[in-house]
Length: 223
Image 1 (cartoon, rainbow, N blue to C red):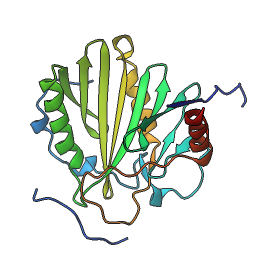
Image 2 (cartoon, rainbow, N blue to C red; image 1 turned 180 degrees about the vertical axis):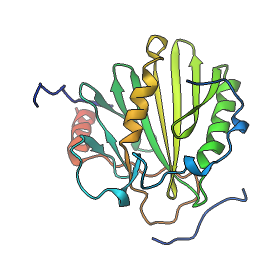
Image 3 (tube, rainbow, N blue to C red; image 1 turned 45 degrees about the vertical axis):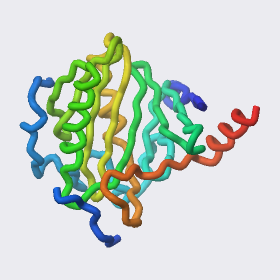
């Protein structure tokens, strides 16, 4: 595990085969959320962005994880979660005052709609685990809120071109009112690089660490 801080700024400062299968927040059933055209990401949306849409550097500090480039807000930290069994990176988290944010990208069908399917399954799983779950609608469609013990969770998802992006923030219930906005802000400015390789639907897009971060973690493990 490695943690890397980002200090606050001072003032002034291709074609491929498709692996598709046959197939304020109000408490509602996830089945009520149809996949609507306006919920599909387009090049006119603010974000998140497909790498093909990014023409130039916008000045936003991001950590480049290969398949995703995730914003790192002032005052936040980057935490790397390693997988001891697989010997690779399990996840990378952005830790903010409101909670820990995890951004993940997956291969998706060209037809879109994967997030509604995944989100419905996720809500069912959380309920089965005893969580208090609320389904709502946000700027990209389905959003899921859950309370697990003392922890408040918020999940959002975005269907992009052949990818799906999922974001979650986990934090104290005392920050539950402000945490979703922090999560949305990071998701909104995330860049996704799907790549051209064929992948089965739902395959997580690979995470690669910047050289400096990978070296730091290797030194920690050796020490």
